[in-house]
Amino acid sequence: MSELKNLIEVELLKDSNVVVETLTRLGIANKKKNILYPTCYLYPELEKFYIVHFKELFLLTRPNGYNNMSIDDYGRKNSIVWCLAQWGLIKLPDDFDMSIIEPHDTFIFVLPYKEKAFWDIQDKFNMKNLKILT
Figure 1 (cartoon, one colour):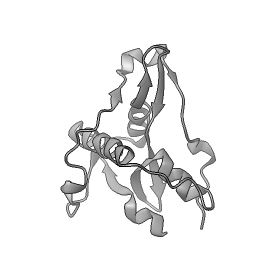
Figure 2 (cartoon, rainbow, N blue to C red):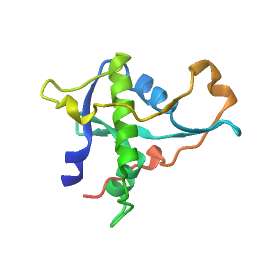
Figure 3 (cartoon, rainbow, N blue to C red):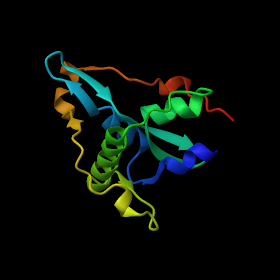
Figure 4 (cartoon, rainbow, N blue to C red):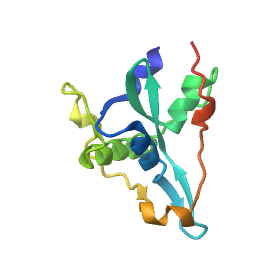
């Protein structure tokens, strides 16, 4: 699938459930209302894993769909990938061009695990109904 060329392939260093849960706590927050909008998701494709922005998932799953990734969107995804790698949750392939995720200076909100119960996490994409276009 040609859309996969823009996704960031990763190797999981922790259980996939740990990576998925961590991704639910990274994104854009409305601190006044305690609402968090996760930015990225873990996308499995044939024994490989990718960190994917929710807008990229719309493109992968909907015909002619939602291709409006901005520079900020890519920057946010890159910052999230960098954080996951620094935290020891993922490893980037040895041949990965690190200049893709550097500089990783786009702000992302990181919700501490112990505060998760006090926040409303509102996903922009439902991974439970994932059906990729072929």
